[in-house]
Amino acid sequence: MYFSYHLEQAQRQALNRGLIWLWCISLLAILFLACRYQAYLEAGMMLTERLPWSFPRQLGLTLLLQLAMPIGWFVMLGLTHRRWRVCILLLSVLWSLGWVGIGYSIGVLELRGGASLTNSYINVILVMALIAFYPDSRLFYAFVTPLLLFLLSEHLFHSFDFVWLHLLAVGLVLIVLEAGRRLLHNWFRLAVRNEVENLRLARRLETLANMDELTRVANRRHFNHELSKAIVHSRHQHMPLSVILSDVDYFKRYNDHYGHQAGDACLKEVAQQLLDSVRKDEDLVARYGGEEFVILLPGMSGREACEVARRIREGLACLALEHVGSLVAPVVTLSQGVAEYQPGEEVDTFLQRADEALYAIKATGRDGYRLAALPTSE
Picture (cartoon, one colour):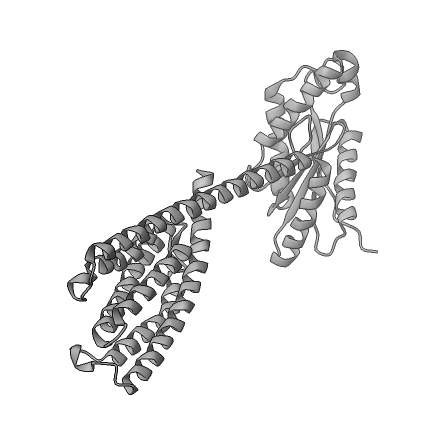
């Protein structure tokens, strides 16, 4: 699913660039054909009465439609990928039919070399379409099919000495186009797949770099980074921001009684309980060091953060991890200091207030939480 999504985005980006390139070439081709028509007309090499319409007007209309294409692309920017492909599919067919009409007109008008020029410029357009549409086979064939059908039926309105040779040449062009399309398309998919794998590897490495190896929550370095970002956001958006700094009560006694392996298992259980007590997509739980944990709560006031601390305390009580060495309860408990960020406050002061609240609750019996006092003005 991740690869498919990334492939769609890469296809859309590549096709947008390819279509812009093809659009620029098309404009130059129309200008060249207009200059060539004028030169051949002055030399008496054009039979204008053979067409029921005016070729200069045909070129002018085609040029106006080409100039209007960027407006259509701008409108389609907000469409979903599926609707965008449908619109590009229709645009490709109409674009190709426009070139078929010009090719027919040139072959009919010119006394000498008209059919030859038509074949040459259509083959050039087919090659340009290969470069522009190779990421998507359906769009590619939506564009080239009218052109190929025109080449196959060209002998019906232009005289050829060897029709079979003409048809064989068209068949060879089709084989070359399909072989080139497959080669480029496979290369494109391989490049996208390699990019996806590199992104996955980079994210995996970033996750490992930001994660505490034991508890599988964020580490202190990642917390500090996210705290700085959250403070900037809080200042700009005038949103509340709180932290909870917690410490496992009498954890040294726990290690001394049960052993360090059991202590590691205890920290894992506590970390999981913290994760279960917060918002999964907004809050951040991190190991602050040793048996200390910290929780970042964007958008929460101090009172709301105290409610989170209460849920943590109740959840840990229900977990009932035995702790015979504790002096406050027969199970593992936490002391928690809560602080709400104040506008203009320094990061160190903010965390220091949470730490002071933590030590205040530890001094009054542990197994609880306390909201830090507001910073004193100097």
